[in-house]
Length: 510
Ligand code: MCA
Ligand code: AMP
Image (tube, rainbow, N blue to C red; front, top):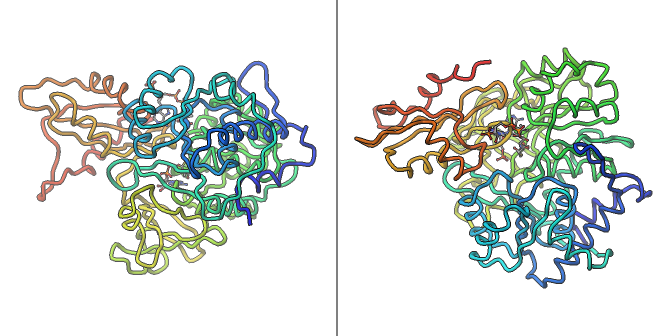
């Protein structure tokens, strides 16, 4: 049986292939892509990939601006049976060097402006093919694909075959590539189609980046598997998004998007009249935002919970709307097991707080070329340890109360303090550092660094941040950097990050 995810998505395309699948929203002149365009465009790229005669399951690493053509490239990689490796556009050379070195992609696709440095890194790592893809469909990828036939039969794939690798840092150290299979992605997309009651005529406003689970899988699979049109924003603009609510029915966002839309006077019940469903995830939605949204629009945001390793694992109910509980991430999705255990692996009673664990067809296959790390993250009875801490109440609602992993989530992007501390500690004159997350009215949490200078060295917080900008993705750069005489430590000598968080908690108070 062919379990290629593309085949399942293709089977859901509407009968009228000349109807609009995607309308772009941020340029003055919208562009319209039909379902046939998606089918033909992805076929041509898939044929280009086939012409390269790559070994099966080759990695195709992609760091490009958001565009419909970039989505076609994703679909083409699925069709061709290779493995899609999306990379955040904010990543700098050092980060890309690590991902490319680790994943050894056969093909790298980058934006035209980055071709010089990305191709240098890729060729050094042994990649044979580097193409460019610009925001408006320019670049060598489509130039070459233009000569390819526009018919392509998806390569048969088994449920367990890899479809994508998503890099995520997990608990410690360098990023690990979470290997997701065609079966993981399709089972989750089908479960969400039912759970969120996707229906004929639904239109999705797509305003998230397409290099992470939320925008790439949850949003696009949802629309494609329902044959639903997408209104496609390359960049999120709160006012422009609200202006399109009148033609749409579903919106998905990280909490920051909701906070930014709440600041717009145009957000009224009338503006939302046509909308059916607002979904939030990737970071905790403050109860305040949940309540404000209901008061302003009459709609109750449906919050769900997911991870790169597990796609979606819980969701608040679709119906009745009154069953969507603010501050909770809802119930385990059908077919997904969610449990809470203490740190010795003992089961906990209802309502008790412990580590959240998950199993099901959504759970990834393991970390790319890291069998020991993979084994560490699973229990002996093969449940995946999420690193999130929470409780499950008597009705099955899951509440996340914290994280055992040292992770900051800023505007929906994950930042691992250990990684930032490592980069800061390597700067001249730095003795040591501690990186923490503190509340931020826009990003939810903001990255703050506290740095100790070596004896005799003079350091400046702003200069440190400026240096970091060239080395790590912008969203990881501390919004504030303090230089201090020493870090607070406990009797064991461990840095007391809780004291730093407490000390700086009002830094960005609204
Ligand atoms: C941009 N900046 C940020 C962030 N985004 N800083 C911290 N956190 C961020 N998330 C930087 C910019 O580089 C800039 O720096 C400054 O902050 C202000 O930028 P601004 O123009 O406000 O940013 P923006 O371009 O409007 O982007 C904000 C954003 C974006 C729209 C909220 O971050 C975003 O699209 N977030 C969504 C992320 C996402 O899709 N996550 C899903 C992960 P400077 O001024 O120095 O240049 S998937 C996942 O988590 C799981 C599986 C799940 O459950 O979904
Ligand atoms: P990622 O590594 O990008 O897959 O991020 C996964 C992490 O995001 C999870 O382990 C959670 O800590 C967090 N997360 C996702 N959705 C939610 C949510 N609705 N509420 C709180 N945290 C969330």
